[in-house]
Length: 434
Image 1 (cartoon, rainbow, N blue to C red):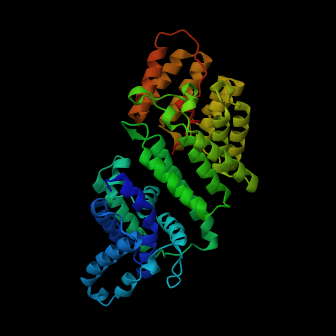
Image 2 (cartoon, helix red, strand yellow):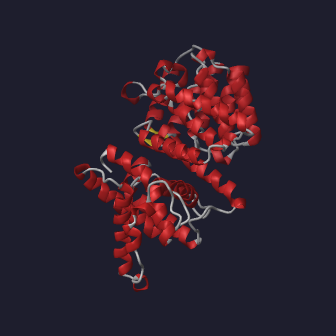
């Protein structure tokens, strides 16, 4: 999908085409491969020939032919009937649903999200399968986004599909007892995809706009399917309020611009307005969950016209509530940075001390970065410089490394007190790291 315009046309169609095939034929692995081949054919042919009048039927026909060719080579599959299915475009497409197959395009998208986040799969496999089967990205595109060889990503996707098959997973909504847990996995996968795009874990660029855009698109789709779910609404709000900072987060040459120094006139007002409305709706309509509370923190930042106008007391209160209902070390990390803005750096450093023995954060550069920032605020510049250097050594993101090395260099031989800024280390300018 080298043509961005064609990619924009194709991606929303993927779950409709794949869902129709899986409902009819089963065998998620074979159907998903066939759809990928159909997408590749469309990416080659449509730019020159134009988009067909019924693109879903076109993709479906090509995919079924691919399945037919494969299954004709298997003696146990030679009697499969595909002609009737291919010849009836209404059965596969326009949004009115498929009574014979018992589903609609909207149902298919939700079922595919749940299937790709099956508990038998590892987290990386869930992410890869979701981006391929629901997002319509090719293996090469996913590999490039996560900076791994295409062969590695292909193996990850293949193993994921094999595990789905071995687990006997079916293309149906999970039973009620399992649905809530599976939905949390879906939200977490979308959250990880957004995070990787918003602050890349490695490589030369801070941002990967293709991943953030795809995460927002998929979460928006999920919100349309489950409009009354507070956590789905909260996640979409969190993404929009965070993505609104994108244009202001980097300076010349891709240098990192911390939150306190950003030109807030460059923030995306439309995303902020939509995100604020979603936060209000989510908090008013349901018991607050982790994504809703994180979105509320992002909303407080969005409402401050200047960094010094930030309501840190409200942010501290939100983090305390978040720490009670969903305790994890990254929440504590962010809470420490916020507490330092209210009660002083010593109070923030005391919170950080509890994380030193937490294996989940061992070796993570953000712990050293937040500690460096708070030590700088406290005036212990020598210790702050050492922690900035340690954080720079641990990170695999080149823009973050340059930022942290620059912070350390600015403190070398300096006797001045640190200037209060949440900075990149506080993670208040992004969703929680992985």
